[in-house]
Picture 1: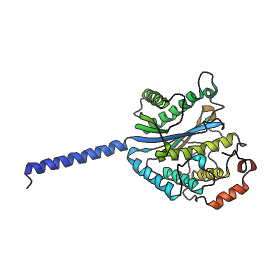
Picture 2: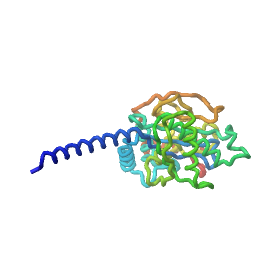
Picture 3: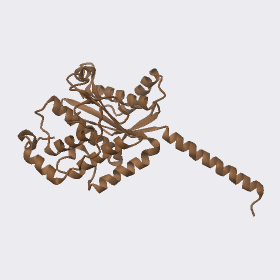
Length: 306
């Protein structure tokens, strides 16, 4: 038989445990988690983009489970990557589901910076390497993510090969210095290089960032070859935003932002608000076949098509 004091102690312990769990949940909701990737840094395109998918830490488990289930349901084998978007309707439809989920979610968002390299002086400066110039814009984007959330933010970035292997640590330090100057409650609690194969969030960032950069590169140089399957993906993704193309920058939004950089590139060709459309159909194999039959010669038949 349990003594009265023991019952009291158990009740007190249970209450304390419940309060601890509530506090833990609140802390999770008050932390931001983000996954980032880049596209176009190989020098073949006239621009590059860095994109970040973020959500409240308390939503992370559901976020990852949802996207992993979608990869399976669309029959995507291996990683979801923009460079693999060609004749696979499943991968394109996964990208459509990803964008729709972000636009319709409570805490998810996608932010990308598109850098016109011809206008970005540091990209061609003798005083700075292109790696340094790239990470300077990367830091600006991460600062924006943490500042807007006004919360501690943990960032996971794709593990790229750099001449200096600790660029991510430098970003964290400089980003936090910038945030302190802004007197923002946001801060970078960690910037980690990770394997994209183990993080579906980075795969989503890869797909959406690759699409945005491809659309901007096509706008800057219409002669660039682009696979017909990618053209179909760009058209459908743009339709989900209520647009005719993905080459615009955006009005400030909590869900989807495209930031043109440097300032001379702002509103080129136009700044657009997000007008979410929810009835955009999936892409079918027939859609891809028709697109390949009607694609411009330079895009459909070039072996160098992106």
